[in-house]
Image (cartoon, rainbow, N blue to C red):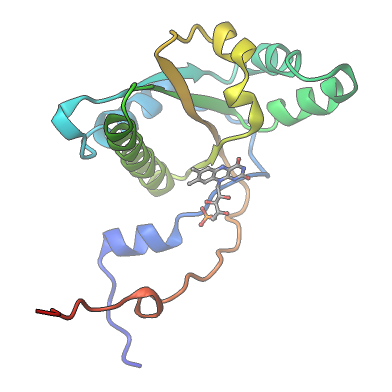
Length: 187
Ligand SMILES: Cc1cc2nc3c(=O)[nH]c(=O)nc-3n(C[C@H](O)[C@H](O)[C@H](O)COP(=O)(O)O)c2cc1C
């Protein structure tokens, strides 16, 4: 098949990887995270609700954060969890409004997902690795309380952040043609 030259955007979308291990110790600058977020928030957001807010865990605070988060796990998992939470260089916790009705909940989660994908693409472009994690602790009421969440808020995810040694290998995606049908009018 003839190779069509991909636009820069298409290339970044295809090349971005979730970086789950192999982070460098280099600190993640808060200014960079804010710069990326200020572009990412141009994601579509119904009624311009912008249903997100962010908690940044900088690199120098991360060892304390790791201990605090690990305390929410059973004693026998504590050490492993401290190690786990220390792996990324920094965290960006994405907090979102937890609407009462299904329509708004779906719209808000859609907006947050779009914004997070924007952030991940922009981060990739700048060499900053990220992975969106939804481990069970994001649903733990004690974790929510420790992070100062309000009753009408929930955690959309922990973004693990860090510059990295090697880009992980990507997994191919199913061609859209295989999941594509064309509507035929029945009238
Ligand atoms: C909503 C959402 C939640 C995710 N949660 C996790 C997670 O808890 N743990 C994890 O290792 N990866 C998580 N991921 C990352 C996916 O595993 C990753 O995107 C997938 O393996 C494809 O890899 P790629 O992003 O490099 O293309 C999550 C991704 C999404 C979109």
